[in-house]
Length: 99
Image (cartoon, rainbow, N blue to C red):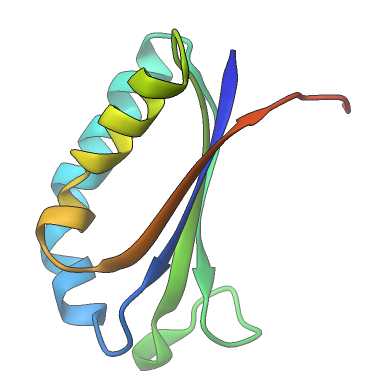
């Protein structure tokens, strides 16, 4: 089943985000290569594709896991959690309807 992982960043955590980004992206590429990633990306803090020093306010990941517990375990092990980027992470079942 698909699960939506929504995370909110701590204010002022852009430097931590940039430092942990390679490890974070590797985990996403692992899901993608396994055919289990529907989409992933950050929420810019301002209305801009590239927010520059304004940074990001969080992230959205929609990926396939065996069950809710597996999705929560994966989300808790994210490098952004360990680095102190994310202040809150929510994991919920997601049903893709369109397209």
